[in-house]
Amino acid sequence: MTTRVRPSTKRCAVIGGSGFLGRHLVEKLLDRGYSVSVFDIRQSYELPGVAFHLGDLCDKQALLPAMKDVSLVFHCASPAPASDDRGLFERVNIQGTRIVIQACIEAGVQKLVLTSSASVVFEGTDIKNGREDLPYAKKPIDYYTETKIQQEKLVLEACDKEKGLLTVAIRPHGIFGPRDPQLVPILVDAARRGKMKFIIGDGTNLVDFTFVENVVHGHILAAERLRPDSPICGKPYHITNDEPVKFWDFMSDVLVGLGYAAPRYHLPYALVYGLALLLWLLALILRPLVSFKPTFTPMRVALAGTHHYYNCERAKQDLGYKPVVSLKDGIARTVQSYPHLRQGA
Ligand SMILES: NC(=O)C1=CN([C@@H]2O[C@H](COP(=O)(O)OP(=O)(O)OC[C@H]3O[C@@H](n4cnc5c(N)ncnc54)[C@H](O)[C@@H]3O)[C@@H](O)[C@H]2O)C=CC1
Ligand SMILES: CC(C)=CCC[C@@H](C)[C@H]1CC[C@H]2C3=C(CC[C@]12C)[C@@]1(C)CCC(=O)C[C@@H]1CC3
Image 1 (cartoon, helix red, strand yellow):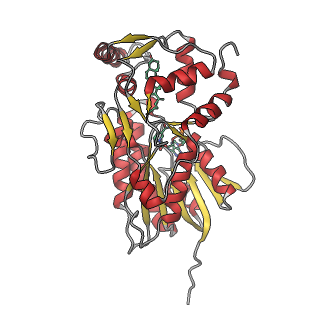
Image 2 (cartoon, rainbow, N blue to C red):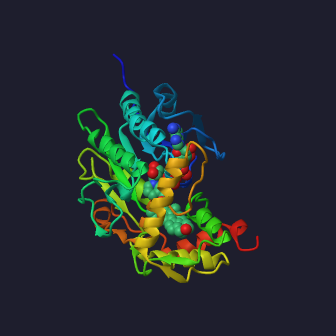
Image 3 (tube, rainbow, N blue to C red):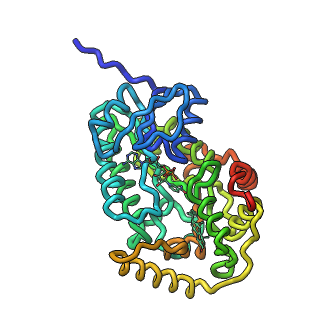
C-alpha cells in the first residue's frame, strides 16, 4: 500500500516572488511561519528560509521542483504592463498560466491564489465603486489587461473540488509602497524632465491606490480561507485601501513628499487623450525606423483622467478583510523609502 504524504499546510510557493509584490508577500509569509519557495526568472534578493528556483513559468519541468511538497501556490508573476509586447503577454499570462495550473495538479497542490487586477473590468471610462460582478472589459485598454482577463478566467475555471485544486483571484488596484519599480520611479522621472506640471482634466477623478501590505494581507486571508466548503472558491476579490482618493492629490502628495512641485495647470482630458493616441500611432508606424516610448500613453492618460475605484465589500464579508495600513501612512512610508529619488539627491 502506498501512503501519499500530505504536503505541509505551511509550505508554499510564490511564482513571481522576486518582484515588488512577490517579495513583500514572501516576507510576510515567513513572518507567519510559512516555509517558502520562490519561482522566478530572476533572483533579486536573498533571505534565510527561502529556496529560490530560477526558470520560466512556461516550462513545466522547471516549475515542478518548486512545487514539491507544497500545498499552496501564489501566482503573482507577469511581464510589466509597460512592456507593451503582445507576444510576451500572451505567452506568459495565458499559456504560462495554463502550465502553472497543470503543474499544480500534477504536483498535488491544493490551493492556487492568483494575483489578478481590478483593471480586468476597466475600458478607459469611469468606474465608480465597481463590484466584482461588472463584466470583463470587452475592449481592454492594452495587451496587459487583455491577457490578465484570460489569465483570471483560466484560474477561476480551474477550481475543481473533485480534482482537489481550489482557486481564488485577488484583484488589487494601483499597488504602491517601498521598492515599487513603477509608480514612484516613473513619476519622479517625469517630474525631473519637467513633465509633471499639468493636471489632466479637472483633477477631481477618484482612484484607488493600494498600499502593498494591504494587498499582501488580502492574499494571505484568501489563501487561509480557501477550503472546499468556503464560498470563496473560484471567485475574484477586489482588494484596495478602501479610501478612494483624487488621482492628482495622490500624485501631488508623493511628489511634494519627495521635494518636487505639485502639478498645477489643467489640460483638457480629450485633448491630451487625442495627443497620446497620435503619439502612440506614430510610435507604431515608425517602429521599424526609430524606437521611442512616449511618457504619456493613451492607457496612462485614461488612468490619470477617469474615475476608477472599486468596492471591496465582498472581501470584507468573505475574507474578513480590512486594510491594515491607511493611505496616509502608506504614502509616508513610501516617500521615506526612496531617499535616492528626492529632489536634489
Ligand atoms: N503593480 C500594480 O499596481 C499591480 C499589479 N498587479 C499584478 O500583481 C502581480 C505582481 O506585480 P508587480 O509585483 O507589480 O510586478 P513585478 O514586475 O515587480 O513582478 C513580477 C515578477 O514576475 C516575474 N516574471 C515575469 N515573467 C516571468 C516568467 N515568464 N517566469 C517566471 N517569472 C516571471 C518577474 O521576474 C518579476 O519578478 C502581477 O501579476 C500584476 O499583474 C495587479 C494590479 C496592480
Ligand atoms: C491607479 C493605478 C492603476 C496606478 C498605477 C499606474 C501608474 C504606474 C501610472 C498610471 C498613470 C500614470 C501616469 C503617469 C505616471 C505613471 C502612472 C501614475 C504620468 C503622471 C507620467 C507623466 C505624464 O506625462 C502624465 C502621466 C499621467 C499618467
